[in-house]
View 1 (cartoon, rainbow, N blue to C red):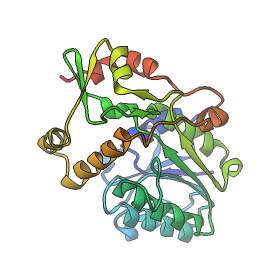
View 2 (view 1 turned 90 degrees about the horizontal axis):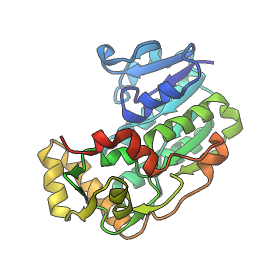
View 3 (view 1 turned 60 degrees about the vertical axis):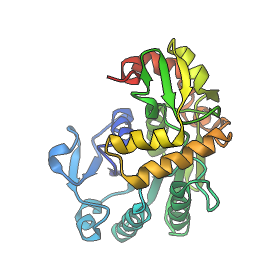
Length: 273
């Protein structure tokens, strides 16, 4: 069984490759071969350009489909799905987004809903994974003894990206057992950033939308991405992400990492350089 991994150089797919028990039948799709991970078969292609996907998808049984956030995401997902059908792929495991739906409070969530529904109507076996807010999104947010972020007073069921990868690996190990399932995966607790900051021996200072936007643009983020990040911030501030689910533990067989465990492993990354 050949598994094709898209988004292979990103945070989740990189961790997914580490989580897979064997890489013997794993192929990664990259746009730039020089950036490909080692130890796996490499296919060069671009989800925005369908003609580049024909050879990359040939002989693939299971597709891990992860597209970058952006207004072009449904186009990339559509091209991948078309290539999968043409190549005879039997199962697609798609990483969607928390709360993806036609009435989601973010453009990203609404776009993911389009691609989720397209996959469900494709005739292929499918599994959809909707992860909560990544703990890794907080990297670089602690300056001195203060954690700065734009989630207001909201509580969130943060999840470690390594656990998203572990969940994906469990599904890919036996995709038939998860056919037709949509999972929403969270961490084991819903916490505020006050609690997260205290875990780091810091205090939390909510950041205004304008300050957050200026900071994101200042480090080179695209306008669309920065605006959507603010949309998520508003939703989380209003309690939209204040819940947990049992899905992770039921599939993986252990609890997801707590924020305390994540902070212990990544304290240096959390602090601004």
